[in-house]
Length: 110
Length: 118
Image (tube, rainbow over the protein chains, first blue to last red):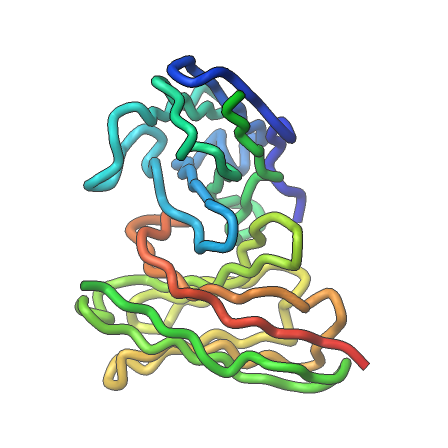
């Protein structure tokens, strides 16, 4: 199963904004909700966004999600050193009847 | 507090079998679909399998179809992953996770390491 495509890395200074793209196809992102996860080193992933743009309880509004066509985007504003982590998108693929994750993006705070 | 506790990982030779368990507590287990997600050392997340609330619907990534079986016992609040014909490429930390939507897993276990090697 092909993974969703994400940039390997993005970086910005503290307080700035970063965006992470997630590219798929009509069978996955195009017709299903997208989720986003943060994974700090040595820990389990944490759900940041689900349903394209919904935040679970406790997730600050610095994190936002959007979707357009077969692509999705995670935005992080007011970047903090604690945001340094790997970020993954995920969705369902209706053709495969299976889940699929993105290739992952490492966020570095300069 | 939601808790998901995986067990059953370990070292196994290629072609061998293992069964992973995930003991759930702190929520109504039977009301949530559950998933297994794995992560090979130094690699990204890979979705493995999903089971519906009743257990009647199961889904797998292509690379494990016919080899892995997901199941659940709602009376014991436990999720399982039976893994047969294991390959070196199955080496990973396996996480069980509670879904709020398809591939939207809001609670995760700590993971259990499966190492397949001769």
